[in-house]
Amino acid sequence: MKKSQNPVSSKTAPSSAPRVAIAILAAGKGTRLKSQLPKVLHEVGGKPLLAHVIAAARRVLPARDIFAIVGHEAGRVRSTLGQTGVNFVLQSEQRGTGHALMVAREAVSPYDYVIVLSGDAPQITPQTVAQLLNFHLDERAAMTLLSADLDHPTGYGRVIRKKSRSAEVQAIVEEKSATPAQKRIREINAGFYIFSVPQLFQHIGKLSTANVHAEYYLTDMAEVLRQAGQRVAVWKTENPAEVLGANTRAELSFIDSQMRARKCFELMSEGVTIYYPASCVIDNDVAIAADTVVEPFVQILGSSRIGSGCRIRSYSVIRDSEIGDGVLIRPGCVLEEARVGRGAVLGPYSHLRPGSDIGEGAHVGNFVETKKIKMGKGSKANHLTYLGDAEIGAGVNIGAGTITCNYDGVNSIPP
Ligand code: UD1
Ligand code: CA
Picture 1 (cartoon, rainbow, N blue to C red):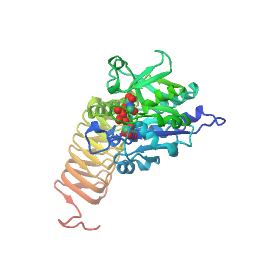
Picture 2: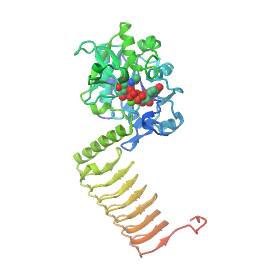
Picture 3: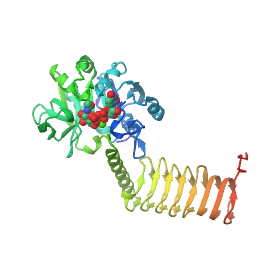
Picture 4: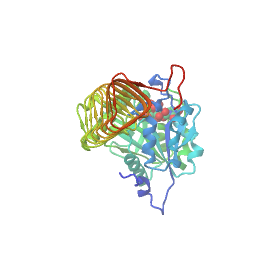
């Protein structure tokens, strides 16, 4: 989908123009991760879980209509994701997914529909969200939920349909309350919903905490609305991978490996050779041009940009760096916030620290460390050298064991 396309506005023609908001459930602690870090800040594909969900949401609606409901370590979550421009709603006590929506009532009430996304399910696509909304509008439902068939549904809520093939839902049953027969149902509640806002808030007060966790479950809205004579619909995605939630470290690593495999296959389809992709760690936002070869056990992280016709040999780790065309990076190099001009040769075992700017065709060799330097075109520092805070012109050959620095052992000397 092109970025300029707004999947929601295509359905919602100006004449009807319903007002749509997105609420992202992101207040939970993530007890099962056993972590100091709030769940939604745990990373997959090199970015926090919530950053992925916000990115998908922003391709559906503008940031002003997106509300992330935060609670556990809210300050930390806000400071990490504040620059996305979305709104934050504070759920100071986390009393369940239903309670999260109660807390968001004031923020969401001005809208006709609210799309609810799960902050811990990072692979959701804008296309699926738009399809779910369109289905909800077609069905004229009060609540529509996204479902998927999973081979291993344990842990998820199960969808009880009114009749086996009907789009109407009887109830959602949480794993802990499910009977053995219900546990055999493979159709799970993905944790993504559309609600018609007036119906949601007219009936949300009927949720109770009479369950094993003593929480207000948003999933109980299915039964509450149905009992109030409202229509509750379900739409099943053909792509179960996109709804997986990261509740445990094992699920986190599974989702991360899926994302990274997908990234490698995308790059390969664009002309990058990656040998043994399962051994490479390439973050989602990395760009690599065609005809570059990535050898086994390479990490390319953050916002790194790699040109075409490069060769990145094994055991190199490149973070937030810009590499020109035709660069050879020999084994074991570490680059952080560095720039490398076209045709340069690095390594083996070079360490380019932040602010290293290596000119076209330059060579930085074995056990050479650089920091805040500009190295001119074709210059060479081939062996055992530290180059810091220096400007080296073009065509210079630096001998083995040379040191440049602005530190006298106690103080940094200003240039
Ligand atoms: C939930 C659903 C389950 C579904 C699964 C899909 C409920 C009761 N169950 O279970 O049917 O199969 O998602 O992944 O909703 N959160 C808050 N405030 C709270 C509690 C949770 O914002 O008070 C947030 C969490 O941070 C998380 C999301 O809501 O991002 C879902 O909560 P979680 O505890 O992970 O629910 P599941 O047990 O996965
Ligand atoms: Ca979850």
